[in-house]
Image (cartoon, one colour):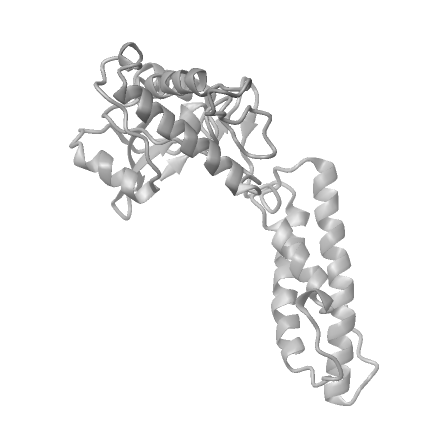
Length: 286
């Protein structure tokens, strides 16, 4: 279980005590224990290490490995990245760490991201083989960087046979700073939660009605369907900052507007189809 968010005081303490990973007894009644670890280089969120986001939406410089280029930066960026890894490794236990090279809305131009990452990994490996990183590795003898997965990472940590601290309490609620608590997910913006529930229920019913529609005069794409607006709105409002109520107020208003507009179009369509099927063209759904 990888975890991006954590209370800022807990985070500072864990980083200082090399406790940014461990075992979580998440359900005492079920007796489940899972391995957990912080993401984002243990920075309290998720994403690539600072200054190493190679996505189009990021402002970080890409890796330039051509030594003849005036923009050549591989040597400097390789050393900076090694420093990041050594710092992160000092905040947990064992010889393996996970680098989360990505975040929200990224990899729209995956080629550029992978091109820079490949160049950086290869450069670090080359410099290491040439003995140029000996003074940068701390107490480690070598560094091996490769693409992996959470499953493979958890297996690598398991194979190190480390006796982990067991956490039995929860991670929530937490605070970003003093008086900045993230809580109330199950109670905040109750009317928006109700709208999401009603919209989801009606969408399922509208899909069944659409399946019975015998008007085959035209073939519609998904976006031309009269229930598309509601379908689209329900997909958006179920975002983790939507139905939870943690969005800004103007965003919550926009969620409600989109669902209501989808409701109106879908209900008009459903009433028309039911009226045709039941022989009563005056049906109105409210």
